[in-house]
Image (tube, rainbow, N blue to C red):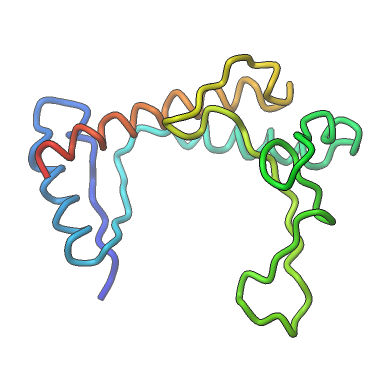
Length: 145
């Protein structure tokens, strides 16, 4: 069985019910769906990816400026954040370098662009605006699903 692809573009218009029902059926049968027609532009994804490459390739002192001093949140250096993701602890740990941006989740707002590294500010703002619209449309789909 293949995971179904669901076009959710109608969730942004007057014909919400069809896409909502199609999405609901996919989740009911498969537990997953690939969504297209979500309105997150390829340009905004590309720009965010390029900005992230620039951030992660920058000097350590600029990255640590966003470190919140604990394992999750802000910048986490690869030496601080290793885990064996496959559960086979006889193998070397998986090395991970990450940056958590505020405002990603529905329960979290970004109070200031200063919390976001300058190189990521514009790209992340546009990406977050687009993904929040998708989240709102998906929340409305629950009414019809």
